Image (cartoon, rainbow over all chains, first blue to last red):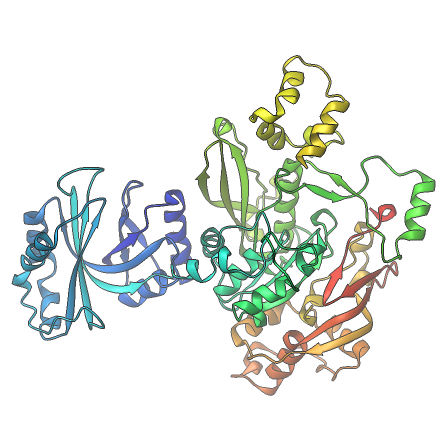
Length: 476
Length: 127
């Protein structure tokens, strides 16, 4: 086991360890995290080889690169002592090599003169090769970690460059440059990150049940997976509903997005369906016989019922015989639109878990985004399923709320206790209106002044009347 | 939709799912399209054990495509790539349905495929 320094980016902090672990898993590399701090972009990990380091980090989104660690310390004296102690055996190999030596100061800066002095202080390494700032055969870097506005760095590292990261993909898939997006498209960086955490990789088969304009399937295909998706709104897949981009003309669809990135051969296709009435094969979850799952991964950002309605197939009220007959007669007409009804968000999350349990292969992953109101952080119930083990929980905080990325692993049937399969059926919110069904939606809108009226009514305990139906319409 | 998708699709009606005849869905009046691509060996090897071979053979017969061998090839038969692998790739990942419908063998419900996108939304009386 050798020590390596990962230069992380200082953002989406709670995702960084989850990504590193996922990258180690997907590359089949044994990794130990030796030093990690939430407030620092420098992470020391143990890995078996340079090859493993490259395999892991070359597809990382939340890092800039990985370095073989030559030394570290609280100040320059300590750093030099550490290098002289830990790495003299490595110096000789680079005696004649064209090289580059640079400085990376996090939250601090050095004047060109200071930089030069710092680099010069490493002259005892006796690198006699030519200095090349471009296309050097080997690069060394000194890292300075400062506290906010501190005059001197609090910690130093020095290492040999092994591999850059896959972070450039974030620019390549930038939503601003994507031909076809919608109002709720996931930011490219987070979509790629989700694909990494869900272990998307060449040869694997991934599915997104709420694909929209295909952001997640595209991210998974970027990492080599064959992807497929569905959405209850066919317009988003077919692209006849227009784009979120002002003045966008011409045919834009999900297939076109895959074509834009040259990934069309990794796209199996999209179909229109509702998760609660999915056409996908459902195998009996756990228990007898073998697991009949066929998906390596499911990644999704289900509708929260705020910016996009949370609806499933069905009618708000139970259909009478006469209405049923009308649906029966009309359903083959090209203009027929199947009725949809609002649905409980909590119930939807459990449906996703049940779907994942019965379609994922053993070890397959489900990565799903869900919102959490900040003030509810502690009581928040992370949905569970006896066949799924939680792997990581990553939080993205916003101003007034936060959302989290939950990742589960499908246990093999032998790992699942048979008793836990007999779950008691849960009680979900009942009602027919969106606000009655969706606690998150209710809380979200309660927090905004525009919905004063609704708030007042709730406060006085008055029954939500016709007025709120009006409000609901406005909010939709 | 590429033909491999049919390996995973059944009727969307819940009561149909328990009946063996709801899988596979039967393509009718299908307009096929072939778009060539590189053979993806890693994917073929991974997906091979998940193929419902008998049912896939049935679908190729119904579509009038070249018949698949009676039994599924073993992973080592795929080679780098062998003719078997190329044929499978052609069938599952290069052939797609552009227009037509998919019909449930149990209840007879028809799901339309338009511009390569199948619609599985159920009408009000079937939910």
